[in-house]
Every structure is written in C-alpha cells, then in structure tokens.
Image (cartoon, rainbow, N blue to C red):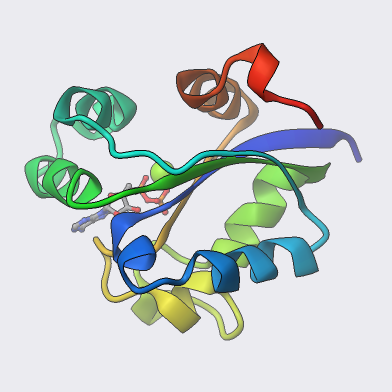
Length: 140
Ligand code: ADP
Ligand code: MG
C-alpha cells in the first residue's frame, strides 16, 4: 500500500466546542501523521469554491453559511492508505449512520455539523491540499 496524503478540515461545530485536540487524537491513534496545520476563518468565496462540487445540492447555501460560522482547522494527513483510512476514522456523513468509535459518531451534531471533512479520492486530495497549503508550508 502506498503512502498517501489527504486533506482534513476540523469544522466550526468542533472548533466551537473546543474539540480540536480530541479529534486529532483519533487521527494520530489511527497512525496518520498531521504534517501541516493552520487555523483560519474561511471567507464566503473560499467556502463556495471549496464545496463547488455541491453547488446544485439543496443544502449548499446552509453548508457555506455553516463553514464560515467560525474558525476551521485544515490539516494534511499522511500515512499508508491515508485517504480511505481517514474516511474510516471519520465515519459516515450522517452521524446517525456512523460506526462506533468514529469521530462523527462520537462528536458530530447532525448531518451538516459533522465535525470533520476528509478528501474522497487521490485527485480530490491533491486539489484540496493545494487549496489550503503551499509547498513551503508542508514540512513532513
Ligand atoms: P462527506 O463530508 O462525508 O464527504 P458530502 O461530500 O456528501 O459528505 O457532503 C459534504 C458536506 O455537506 C457534509 O460533510 C455535510 O457537512 C454537508 N451535508 C451533506 N449532506 C447533507 C444534508 N443532507 N443536509 C445538510 N448538510 C449536508
Ligand atoms: Mg465529500
């Protein structure tokens, strides 16, 4: 299996509840390394661009409002099979369907305020990492 990188975002519902460290302990205990990190306030334009793939969905406007409602923590995670592994650690989009021991089962509020984002494929991971981080910000 190859070493991969994926883009994680700790979302405003989680930064608001002071859960950054608890969520990162799930990430690190799964064997994923946090190799880049920042805490930022997204602009509306940035949130609309990041979630552009969802712009036709009924929840798009609410999703953008939510993502700019407070600070977020984008991070690059690195490890064996990191993209699929982090999706497992996150759990299902709707916490009602998430497995025990996943971040979303343990921390998410509902299908929108679900605490974390994770890339879903190598192509999207590369685009999403470049959205938040320049090469000089990635130290490994
Ligand atoms: P995931 O984050 O698991 O990859 P999606 O890419 O399908 O899920 O959706 C992106 C984000 O949009 C979700 O994480 C969630 O915050 C929000 N979302 C998804 N489905 C809904 C929904 N039915 N109602 C409200 N918000 C939603
Ligand atoms: Mg997604």
